[in-house]
Image (cartoon, rainbow, N blue to C red):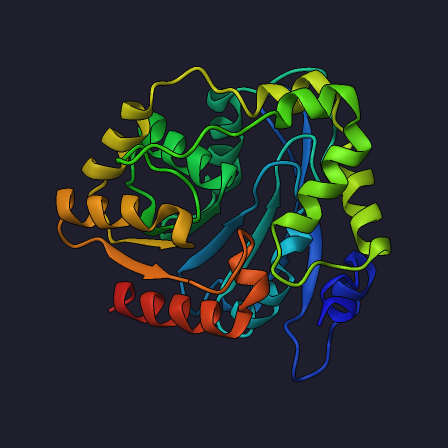
Length: 285
């Protein structure tokens, strides 16, 4: 599975067989002059089906982490997988590593579209919530938050000394992180590639992304007041938060992946893809 998962962008672009979604890499320039990249699939559906599926990765991760989803969703829907600033194939600027600027980047990516299913994982889920806070949900048909705290109780356990480890031995801290987020870790070569990609961003900028200056209630209030369909997909670490969000925001759909790692959509892609397809059909009615 992992050999196929980490094919890379070159083969993504070449995927023209009937069993694979045709994909390409595109870019745009932000209002602060930064060139950001995204992978696009299913462009042929843009005029036949006005729903866009937008995939936002987590901290330090590239758009290609969504490889299985790009292929599956791109067969039926216009789909984009985003490389946030400093990540994947996007430019690495010297600034803009704040929730506000990253949400603005997301807004500028999505401006051409009017009916969007926004899927954010980990930090990407937080930045999706910030997008809603700053720009509203008018363009969204629904949102999927994947394995990220949404400010409900109980609060996550303290994150240990990860930030200190990044300062002391960034390479080893990143290698450990890349292995820990999967139940079946990628190969050493694949981990090395992920670490190399993560290190394109300056250390202090990567740390800033782990330390957004908001109280937990900020994220809780955005999630609770979101007016569109919401699916919260979690591993057991956020199961109690998911139950509380469903209690405090009736109508929230919850799915728990008990045997997957933090990158649950990579560990169990078929199950995740079926879940999103079902949710997509519901919001498209």
